[in-house]
Length: 357
Ligand code: IPM
Ligand code: MN
Image 1 (cartoon, rainbow, N blue to C red):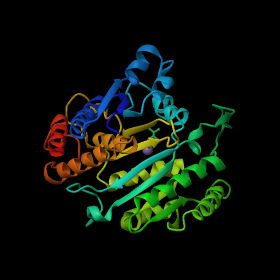
Image 2 (image 1 turned 45 degrees about the vertical axis):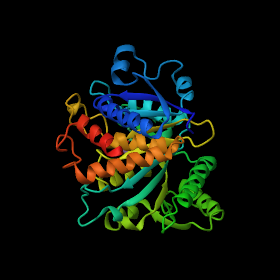
Image 3 (image 1 turned 90 degrees about the vertical axis):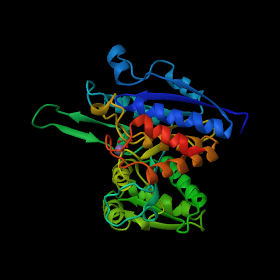
Image 4 (image 1 turned 135 degrees about the vertical axis):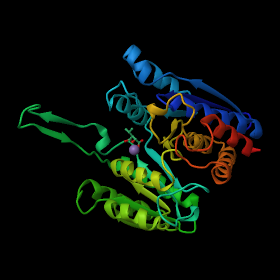
């Protein structure tokens, strides 16, 4: 891999997005020097400010530009002067759909020194991964109104599930569970087959069928409501969870808080097909009230950069960042909350860089 130049498009985005992105790129530069590989980052000014200025969210030719890259790094989107939903749909969801990033990978891992709201739980108790389908379900935007703005108004919002869509996600999750190769080696399907008797029946049947190709992986099923209780009561039960888009959105915020909150949680939107372009992001939002103050936690963004490297052919560099982050959370930072870390945003980035070597 040494001769390959890693080409990244960076969309720092809104609010504190640019600050955390800068720290992630700082850490990338440091690990690239240690691991001796080249990288290029092309910064793109997509986000709320550009939208307010130009009315454009993804500029013309933008998708084709991203397709020439090895990966995309997204800081944060969400602007106080832009109505909710516009940037989410026009940027984040549009990129997920148009780049066909059909896996949303969200590790739930409690790092050393990080506080979890679950009493008495240690890092070894909270270490599982959620594989969320990322292109279907209620996220498709299929629906409509009847008699809008009248007392008889009807709104319909459809959940779409396709055999192709669930099968590729489920198969990827089995493969991932096999490769993760934890002592549990267990894949839990999380759905709601007792109520969603069509869509989630398709998921269940597909899961059972694909499972036959993976006799070494233990299979398991939870209804989503029970899963929420179990994640709190027995997080150590889980290894890998595969789930639908909407449920995955909800349970990964629960997972995010179990692992210490939005300051640390990161995710990847993967298109694992050959030639596919994946996008990595910290899970916290743009936190506009902290913007420009150098107090936001960059650890989630740095974790997202580690995931980017791991999934773009530089797994050793990714693991080096993971180890450096664990050293910093475990021995330096006072808290993972913005403004309470004991260090500024830039200082946390510097500490990770120092811990790399
Ligand atoms: C996430 C976010 C997005 C989602 C929003 C911002 C559209 O909550 O990445 O989990 O619902 O997928
Ligand atoms: Mn979410």
